[in-house]
Image (cartoon, rainbow over all chains, first blue to last red; front, side, top):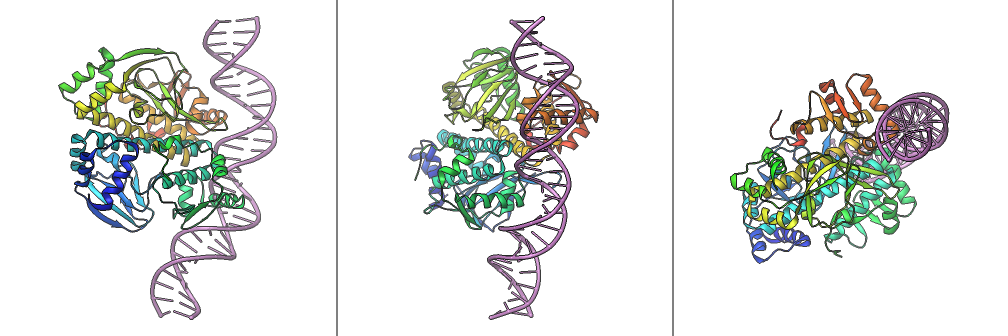
Length: 243
Length: 243
DNA sequence: CGGACTGTTGATTCGAATCAAAACCGGTGG
DNA sequence: CCACCGGTTTTGATTCGAATCAACAGTCCG
């Protein structure tokens, strides 16, 4: 893994852990295959048996499951620096789909290479494990969101979370959060219908809490948003508040 | 960790992985402190900073989060053989509560001991990591359940899942699933109210799909239950169908 | 025996889904 | 350059599933 790809991963892993020079070098030497994806393309699908994981260098992807009645639920959104299918290292069959939200740059690394890396570098292994644990913490919060919050609060919570996560990787330029999701996709994150998401978005706009369009959203009143959302960021387990 | 405690953990870890004699011995030598808990006691609470993990030897516990409005959402139920707070090994602050559902026997192991074990036994580390990944897969399915299924289907799905998981550890005696949850607790798993859970339970009973009482439930028509639930067990990642 | 949960029932309300149609927008091709 | 097309956003009317409110019955336990 070379250049900015390695840098992005290392930055992320260092965020929560202590890696030494050897660890960093090992990551830089990781054999990686870079592939470009268009927006809205499936990367991995339910039932797949992966032999590699991908590092999300640029763009957004989401994970989703679809019920027998064809109802889709998005279970997570991934941002640059993450490894959305890291669980395939130990869970051999995919139990959901992964789809790109935007054009993406993905860096594929074989399971073999990752396993060797883990075997030789305990700190990296711990850091990667930790990444999957943070994912799990976010899943838990999403269950709470969908199960116990009102429609507006759910939507507000999603925005608050993504604002924090994108802020932590320095992707927010004076308040503008670049996240090109359609209202249908928002609805599928929240267990709502598109129509209702549209109405709740209007509520948030009317209150002057945010503006939004196809390219992303812009939080105008963060405090009010987070309060409305019942947002409590502990679950993100962000070690440092990066700005 | 001695006697049946070690056996239960080893059985579980072997289920998905290959451990050799040395690994097994290391687990048996793990220093463990056994504590008994009454039913409905909090084991770990939001904000805690753990220095140990506990192995659930006997009984059931659940993890939950509560919104600012006081609405509780149960995000997972744990059964004997699991380590519900294993994530504390790498995520230092608890982002939810863990409560016993029944009287429980818990075996506490210090983080230090676990970290030494992981450092020396790569296969055990992988097996433990895998456990947390299966947890995460279940969280994802719960989000789908709460987000996209009807009330009856949600309830049916919960029963179907617990039937499979308890079956895999040999806890089902001719169809009877021992799971003493109140309807309020069921409701908190499903993002529903107690009243509505009561009505949906009656629906399932009326259809002759199951019987249930305070001690647990008894599935009469498994196939119909799983179909109604849109239950597809891949996400449980049960390597072998144990009987 | 009494009290506190837990389970059940009925009447009513309400939030979100559904159904349907129109407006908008960005890209494509004639 | 403009007409068209598919996907997305918006609006309105209506329906429906689950919540709410309220009361009562059942059960466990000290």
